[in-house]
Length: 265
Image 1 (tube, rainbow, N blue to C red):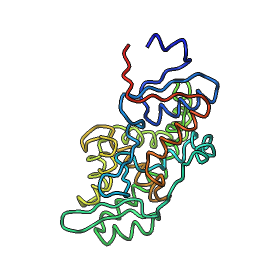
Image 2: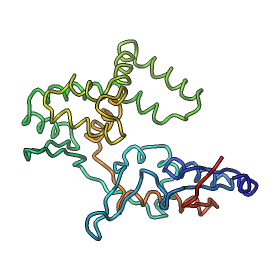
Image 3: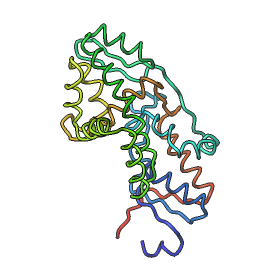
Image 4: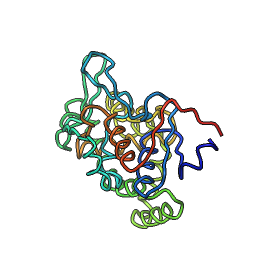
């Protein structure tokens, strides 16, 4: 590693999308940037491949790009990424679970459509979902403010202070409860059927949060109820197209990407 240092201003270990975004920004700022990835393909958990039949591309891990698409990064780099081939596909049917008894339960883009589906499945689920939707309206501004904040301590502290003042004592208690709750506790506390519980649990598993992991409820809560409002956005041609576009953007500004590259301290 020391032999590389004189030729580079920054060396990033790993090529997940966060590292590639960082590398692209550093390269745009004129830094001589190197990204090292020990695997043969860059992208980390943002990867797609033909794993079933030729011509059918599947996202292997990350698939829903709503949070990225709504981020400051997409707002700033979006036009450049589009020039490098990034195109989104949108669906008003964001996700569904299929069960062994051949039933399915869906979340639609639209509160009324989703509630109608839940009402047909189990009226108690519809009641609970309405309550969660009201909770989303109260808490989502604070959660998205935290998601969009800079990661230095001062910025996070400023955002937290602002949001706690807005939420007040009752809202702060609701937020703290959500941040500490597991997916199972959250789902069973608001929804009646096991099938409805699974609508939240699947998004916890998506981030490797098992049903009983404390703090696992926040992402499923945000994902399910955001999808109900905006649908789902996928990368046309597979999630790896996002990785390719980020690398192309950085490379156009001088970023160097190396795969099969072990790094040692």
